[in-house]
Each structure stands twice: as structure tokens, then as C-alpha cells.
Length: 362
Image (cartoon, rainbow, N blue to C red; front, top):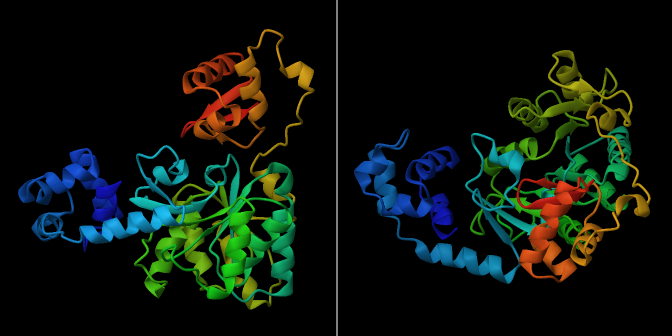
């Protein structure tokens, strides 16, 4: 983690070059310990970037970042971390480091949707956002957006109304909130089991050039991206294009022909860059989400379950994955007993293991 953070602070080293380097040498630490010629020989690096790595001396900044994260309960996720979002992990430009404040289960939810749009929505746009988020309630999906004014804020606020976890992906360090008017919203999101996510360290201000980098995370991190309202040249159009390139489902809410705020959505639909959403309920149908009804308890529990197996099964939820560390706290058994119970329950077909040491009841 220490050297991964340091690598993000080296001038000229972006996510793709950082990925090339760590894959080549095996770890970020090994990159810093390699000689300049070996570093320079890696694809797209060269001698100037190699010299920048070898001359890096701002280790105190790494210490400051780690101290701030510890003081403010911020998770630092590298690609080797079990809780690094799997959907991002498979992107060619996945962030080297993610900073996350909030509930890790929400970050790695089984079902998730990013909802974006204009900063100046119409009443129709706000209504459509509310209706879309309401359809996600029965699926306990996590709602992602960018904490901006307009559609972003409406998506976060409606998720709170529906008691759904919602995560804001921001274009700055987690030492602040931008826009500052959304500090109360951010607090409510954290209190309700959601979170705040960024690839930027605490020294990064919300500068204009950071927002496209933020948008690629919004585009890639969820099962689908929904564009509610946007002008033909709005930033949401770029995010929609990114989502499509990442292989995500892209949906657009149709609007009135003469409404500038709907020109972008109509363009996406017309050029087969997004699937039209004629009614909000179509979103979960098109994603193939089917709400499972929980079978009666007596049908789920074989009579020969051990005490630990029963406790683990009862601690797990349907459709919402739980990390193994959280299970240890819930069950209050030693780790070897919990691991044995998980294996046994999985073999019985009562639970499913997910990437990142996550488990869900089925």
C-alpha cells in the first residue's frame, strides 16, 4: 500500500503506466527498488519517467495520506486488496489506489446502478430519477453517482429516501466535499450505510481536469449506467461512451423532442448507444434482476447443521454480500471455525462465495 500510494505521487506516472510497472516487477515496492534502466525498459515508461521514480523523495506526503486515512476511517484499496471493486479491477485504466469512506459491503454490492445527468434538470428529470431509484428498492441495489448538483444529487437523495445505500464518486481528496453545499448530503449518505469514493489523495483539490477521470469510475463501477437528462454536448455523454467501452449496459430516459435537456438522451437512443427506458420498471427487467422470495426458514436449515453453521447462515443476507471479516464479528467464533462452516454451507448449496471474500445466502 505504501509504495502504491507513492507511485501515484510520481509526476508523469498515470494509471496505465503504473499498472504496467507493477505487473512487470510484481509490486509497487519492487518498482522503486529496481534500477533506472530496468524501469525505463518497461513499455511506455522511458528514461525520464524512470528518473522521476528513482528521484522520488516525497515520502512524507505518503505518511500524511496514511495518517489522514487512519484518523478519518478511510479505507485505502489497492488492486491487491480483497475489497477493491471487481468491476473496476478488469478495466485497462483501473485506478492504482482507491480511497473509500463508508460501508465496504455497499461498495461491493451484488447489484448496482450509476445514475447521471445534467446539473440543471427539469422537473421531469427529477421525477424520472425518483421513479428509477424507487424501482431498485426491492433489489437492495447500490446507487452510484457523482455528488454534483442536479440529477446526481437527486439520485443520492432518492436512494436515501428508499433506504438504499448510495455512494458518491468524487473528483478530489476526501478531506473536503465539492460542492460544499453537499456536505450535509454526504454525511447522511455515510450515516445510512453508503460511502464516498475517489482515486485522488488528500492533496487533490476539485479542479476541472479531475472530473473526466472521476467520470470513468462512475461509468465502470456499476452493472449499468442510466442517463436521465443531458444536453447533446453534456459531460454525461462522455460518461455514457466510457460505460459502453467498458462493456456496461447503458440506458437513457426518453424526453420531449423540443427539450434541450433531452437532446443527449435522444441522440444516445437514436444511434444505438443506449437502450431506451420507456417506463422506470423496465430497468430491472432489462438487467435480468429477479427478486427472490426467501423460502420459509424451516426449509432452509437441515437438521444436522452445527451451531457455528447455523450462526453463519443466519448472519448472511439474501442478495447482499457480507465480507468474511464482518462475519467473524457477527458470529463471534474463531476464524478457522467460520471458514469451515462457510465451506460446508457452500457445499450444501445454501450460500455462494463471491470475489473478494464475500458471501451471500441463496
